[in-house]
Amino acid sequence: MSMPRKAMKEMGFQTCCLLCDAADIVGTERCRQCIATHAVVRDALPDHPVSPIDQLAVELMQMLANPHRWDHDPVHGPTLRKYQILAGEFADVTPLATNEEVADLFERQAQKSKTSVIRDVANQSQWKDIAPSLAEAREINREITPVIDSSVGARTVPSREIEKVDVSDRPGEDRGLSDRVAAAEKGEKASKSQREHVEGSEFARRQSQRKAWEGEVKGVSELLDGGASPSTDSDTIEGSESGDDSVDDELDI
Image 1 (cartoon, rainbow, N blue to C red):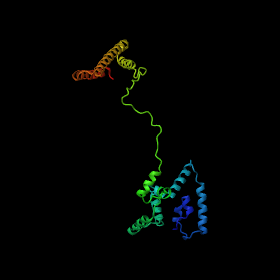
Image 2: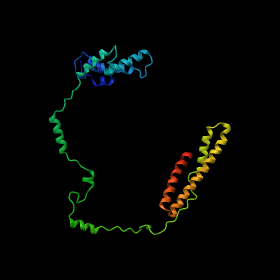
Image 3: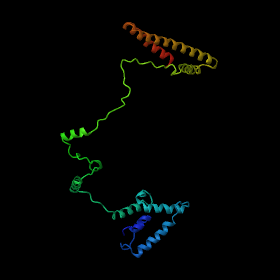
Image 4: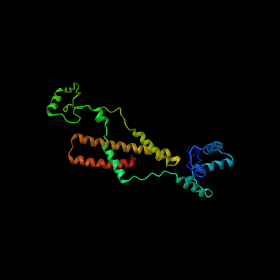
């Protein structure tokens, strides 16, 4: 048994070195001839095997190159496991680190000085290690030019009346379209003969309820703006809240 040569391992024939009966001497004539012969065999294997014999050759080559992946094979498994045992005799086993070695490593790392680019290189201030004295701080403060903001912007005048914004050109939600869509959805559930009638009646009902709701909201707004009594305001608001729920339920909004 010999140590697998590097060239044989690269070609996937390291198992042949493990079974070799020659002396384990690197660079002998037998090693050179063996490597050259196996290189010819490796080059003869097709990359995309088609025939059954080519597929068998490639499969056997894969078993030799990676015996640990094929040791479950019912035919070649025992032999491949034997190859792994032979290869394990040449494997370098790294001894585990002792407690003294680990402690020494931590000690050497703690003694290393860590350089900070920002603290040690970029910061060239003469006070980076010690703060300036009170007299020096006052002198620095006198040398600093105060910032004068020449443009303070428009100031807010609390007593000035704010003009109302005209939002008449902002209709917002198209409630008529929303009612038509809801009426069309309800009409689809009816028969074809009644669909048009159902859509029209549903749309008219929603429009009338929406107008009634807008009138109630307007009345509440007028009462609030006019400074009505608390009892009147509370009664009106309670009525409007109950009306809000009923309108939302009926309009499905």
